[in-house]
Image (cartoon, rainbow, N blue to C red; front, side, top):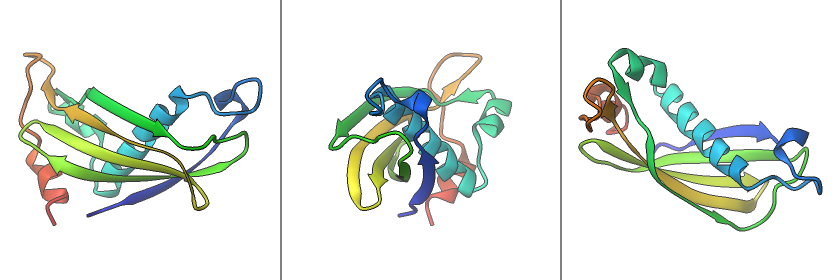
Length: 131
């Protein structure tokens, strides 16, 4: 299983008045991890869009274990659990050093932008993660 590790720093704008990261930012970091995992394999959302494909999130779960705070460096660990015909399930762990802050998943479905119907996952993506 391929795991991408990407570091992000918590900025003041990511936090509430108490310096604790606002909950929705964890979902933003899921997207960062997903994008970087694809990029590491030579893939990008821009490339999919040129094929008239988008991959919206249709299911998301995030379980919070500890709080990230202003100026922390967070490691986003991203992997793929399953690739279906038109959907893909990404797994995420967000860590500060060895402390698990949050974990979860997203399910993204490839959709043809013209027909607005689900579409087969591009062969290039499937091949990149089958080895």
